[in-house]
Image (tube, rainbow over all chains, first blue to last red; front, side):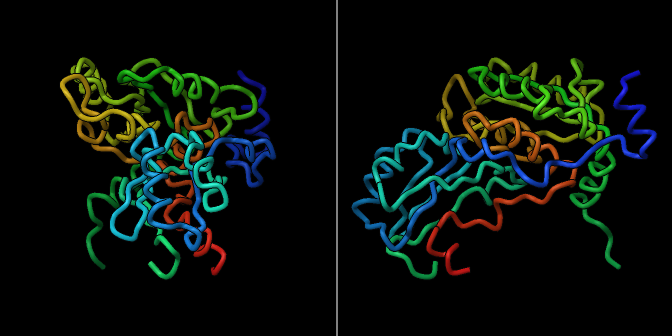
Length: 112
Length: 162
């Protein structure tokens, strides 16, 4: 029998928790974009939509619709929109609802 | 006190798997990068066994299906057989941007998104999702972690105001 299992029985713990503090190296993982909404313009939003290879970005009137489920974290929108777009640093994106993975960012800022 | 809904009952049943969950992976036409990340789950830095998760080769022994790929139509039969062979209560986790409908349009070859074929419990985005993201998704599936993404707006101005 595996040693960890015996040791776990001895301590009354068989399984352990998900790490509380995430390793430093995870900061280098490719992550979906986050937007400085006040620096977005309609023209820039359209350029971002055009450069997205996986249909993760779309523009609806004055909102940029970001589908995190479709995003491959390729970083092309971050290159295109330097200053207005940066990596979000969030990679723990699991969701029980597909709709909750679709985010709406108000172009030009303001409550949305 | 009101009767629990079917969804609440399912959540409670899945919570019973919290310390021992067996996982069967199904590939519906993925490029195999998701698989390489799933394989890494048993490597020492991630070590899914310490969390009580185990990979099993048979759907009949599994509690959870970890499905990758854009649901190619050629896999319909095998996928549904695997789903039906998995005993209830069971969970289905869609892994990667293909399975979530990001890469392929629906056409004669692919469904384009896994939720057109099976009911999905947890969606794990990423191309591919990091093994840590997979672990978080599995823990969300059994109710041991809350999902983070619901509270995030991905609008840095709105985040700064909070």
